[in-house]
Image (cartoon, rainbow, N blue to C red):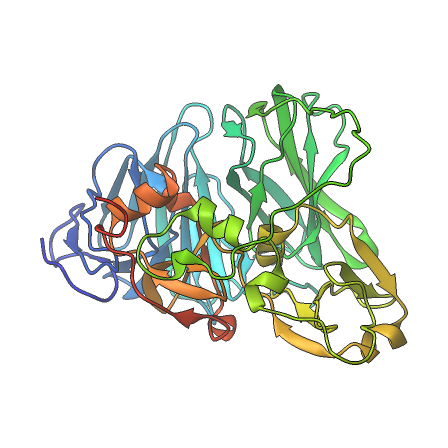
Length: 437
């Protein structure tokens, strides 16, 4: 097995039907057995189909029991409760035809993304990719598409049987195709699907996945999630929900008797010790309680700010939500994933007139809250932990990742767009010695 420094690739040797030649070139540089049961693909992995001479990509976090590659096809075995996601990169993504009854084209952010869900009993699917640009964005849609004009929806995960822990992050996955799609609404039921009163995301971009911070609540064994595919004006085009119940292991809400005293808060430390040497995800989050601290913002010496520091603001006719900084400027959330590392909901949202919003100058982009998630970009396989000030620290090995984020570390990695990666700076790597190993 060869070690390198760029990308991990799966490539078929000529004449080696159903065999894989694995060239390891990982940022983390740890081995991965592609044929072993319950394999987790720790980073995005390229797969070359020699017959049509095309490259595919296996999403990080995918799981499979086996993957067999022939000249023109590949077969994946996915165990119960697991999900394997394959994508055909754009800008003109081809067809991922298969014998598993899965929609062959799920257009998402320029790629064709198809997920195999093991369901209750596991699933085996053979794909026959073709290079024809058969999967393209619909002319009238805003982010979903496919070969059929009729909108469709399939809830991929959670689809029943999972156990989610309150406070953890879980990747909700769905597939949606057809024309006229403008967004996706995700809702939660705790009564086995009779009602869905809790909104998880009101208008999520149709990119097939959403990182959900599982709420603290009384433990329930009858949870389900519904994905509603929306059209112009919020019209409902299609929907699907979890086929069976899953469990949320939470904590019952507690009430405290008022003491009549003003609550006290401990100010964050002047510096974040996690920027060099040892790193602790909880300590990094605690040292950076808000965006003001993260960016080192101070109140202006002159002039009253046009918004309340620490609040969320938006205009009357604009959907974008901003953070009001202590310096009286508004800060942009590049996406919902960034937003939910800082806030659980929009309870502090203040609606301003468009004129009031325009009078508040832009201060820049918000970056991920330290300690909550790790990040990477598609063009750089390195995975980074985050410290105050958007400082990225390369996690050098799987052992370090596990020590920092537990056994499910590989499910706590988000891709950051290259366009927003420039908002971060690179610091010292986190070595095994730094992690106490």
